[in-house]
Length: 141
Image (cartoon, rainbow, N blue to C red; front, side, top):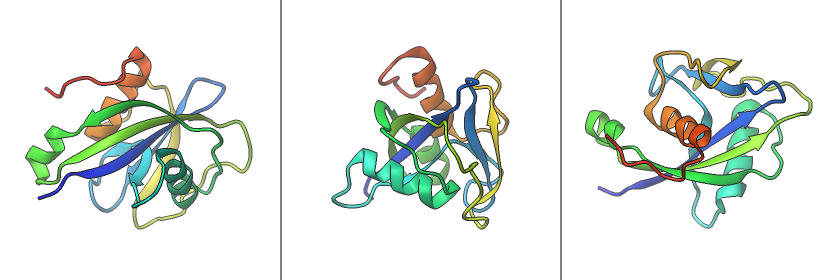
């Protein structure tokens, strides 16, 4: 078995809220920040820009890496080991985010990062905690 590199992107707005989506296929009914798998030869930033455009139809500018999440709970539950590179981007423009892949996402909304909707996906919860605490990495429980 191999370890997969994923990217998770916290998109924040000027009101201090972050964009999350409710998964409708794999990992349903969990809520999560947006992201996906890194493609071979792709930078973390390019992967983040591509995934966000594909999933919510917006163009993010200057995403920056702030942390790593080693998703061991998900591995124990599902047998898939993913390391997530966590990025952040502020979004101030138009158009409004919209669901581009309804087979993967049933709903999206801006939420207070201190009051996340439940159930919440492990990698997303870890990324948000790292971002809020200004940490790069926290060992899995």
